[in-house]
Image (cartoon, rainbow, N blue to C red; front, top):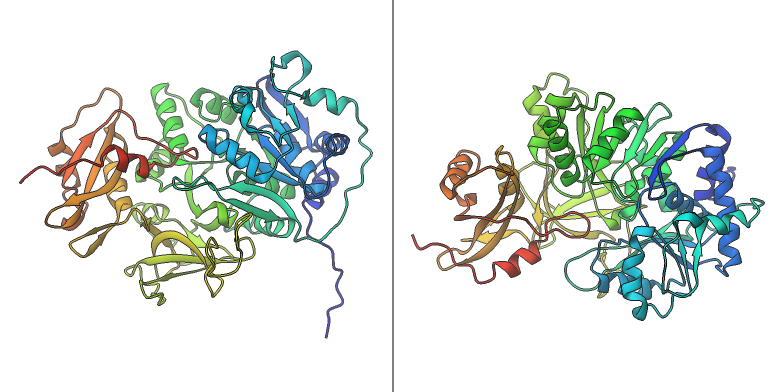
Length: 548
């Protein structure tokens, strides 16, 4: 028996139409190179999206074409998100912080013929122009007054193109499984791999992300996504915000600038913001150094890397703001788990709640997860057993662009039972809270015992004088491998190896205690802000532990 319900396709354009009709006066505020505080409402935004579709078609773009963007978080990038996908093309966000050769590889692999580029990214394209033979048109996201000089062929001005078009356009409806977006992984080994999102997966991801126990997105909020729009669709914020009518504040190229972030949060009365731990550490340090506060900020979402306990405590104690940690990856769109208390936890102490906030959260509806041992046998959710984390769901990738999507085949991330192999090692508590203990390639095996590098790093950064810490396994003649702790100190602070080991002594079990501590001026990071363990292994490939 078939149901008697309308078969409306889940379309990204439907989010835009809903926002235009129901929240026409809600603001979208942006920082751009050509305007330090641009403002428009959702009604104007919708009109400009229709202008942009007509621009795309005038440039020869058609259904299924991958339209590349190298841009920051601002209103023009948002217009590309909706105009490109809504018209049936594929919005391909490219991370301009990647190595130049990776950027060139991604553009060529995706076969981008048209690129929309922020002014500040133009020097990168200039340097790569001999390697981008497939690119036919470069559109600079600017008005005419701020257009840069360029030696690239066929460079056009975004605002001039829009001015020449009509906003007469009817959004088409097509199969909801049509590709809507692309984002390449930023792995430290091998070439980046392309994850292709659909209209269906994107809309479902936004719906799940807006649930009360997830982000609780609403028309009553003002959201500042600091997480880049070139990094897994800014964790879905560009879609969830328009879906519920949230005011958006977009920091443009100033996403790492503490002064700008403070000004935006206070002047626009931002209530919720999202970013990686390094961003929050920088903001907290700026606020503390300048004796400033963020009284409107109620919630700081954290992802991309394990959140140090100090961030949770400083936000709570200094700014009365709740830190909400989540876990996900490019292949999961990225929402997988997120922190939230459960009924019956009302009487937990502040310390007990903080303990939970430092985990990676509970699974959201739409995501199944399990952990398995070396024999692929499922392990219990007891908070003790840890194994390889697998997930599956309607917004989880089943393959990579140009590679096989046959489960179990070479290059396919999904096994024969349809589970995505995340590459993370984790445990899960009886209440369903996920704890990422390591990456499978980063876990340290010492004397037959597995040691979590993340556990040591989290303990170390809780020292007030330590800014960042990383742990890698190095060869040991007796134990095969032992942990080496690499530390970056806070500016003006001084610690010895013995000081650090004494601090860790009652915080780690004996086998997890690092055998040595080395101090460096700066840790290497990937383009998405994660610590580059591969780079550290190369730096310390000849390291030998002190002879005891």
